[in-house]
Length: 390
Image 1 (cartoon, helix red, strand yellow):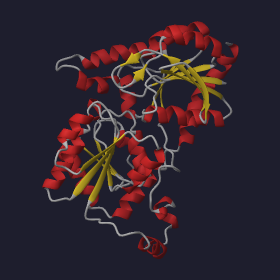
Image 2 (cartoon, rainbow, N blue to C red):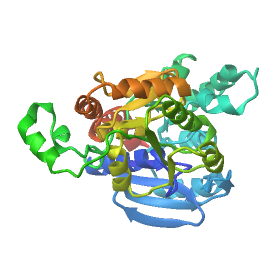
Image 3 (cartoon, one colour):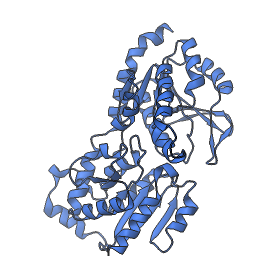
Image 4 (cartoon, rainbow, N blue to C red):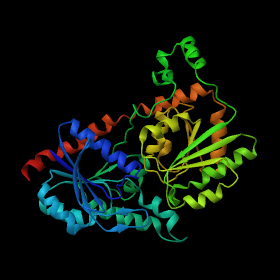
């Protein structure tokens, strides 16, 4: 089956979206399917990648973050040539013009819902705006235009449940458990293989580390809906409470300069965007706790990657990130305020380090990418006779 994936907002600096699309694409290839990714860019290109063929279509700029978007005029002729058996669209903007084409061509259209409309718009609309009604209207149209809608969490599914949509499937994403892993190999090996005396020998060979300094990390786009400033405010509260903590921020975005000002006088290191995933994994694994303040996550890939590194997380109760927590010690959910985040960090620090790191890793091991791909292909199997007929 030829699966064509369409994704706006896919750039070298993209975070979760790029990871998701590429990891799933690798899975489609491994399962014997023909995968083609179509993305917008500054100029046309056609190249082979480890995740399959990637076609870049020149498109107009969108916003101030270096994004481009696919247009119907330039993308429809490409789809005619590609002749997909199934289209997997990873953004809601394209569905409006893509759905009529797919219907005429007899090609099933699957919408991969990576964001929840009301959660994304909440910090951008004035008080009193009928946000729920507007989101419901948009989602009814999306549900009617797509054959299937894939959501990754209960939180993401709720906005479609609210309108009674019946073509929604919940399929969690996965994590690269080989790249994102603990620095302590005995945690990575699992608790059943732990031999205490051997672990002590291994630990003795490590260079001395000042454990009195609590290392925090936040991996996030620095934009309003992610609420990154709350992590900085939580750090300030911890230090005022006598906890010697420091924060490393991995990621970039429109709030970068404002956040630097907010962090003035605090031990906050802004690393910017880091494209090398091994470097990110090492930095996250070296931290004591990952702070993830965004209440708008429909899954929380950065949260899952932290857990895979054996780094416990503090997340807001609102959003989907809390659905990833597992055994006690893997993380804490809170009200998402700076005070709540600081309290959650303090609570985790009271748990022995090895216990909380082991719990975090075990939580992530429930989410391999292979399971995500298998479940997606199970849904798409319903379309194969239709695709052959078309």
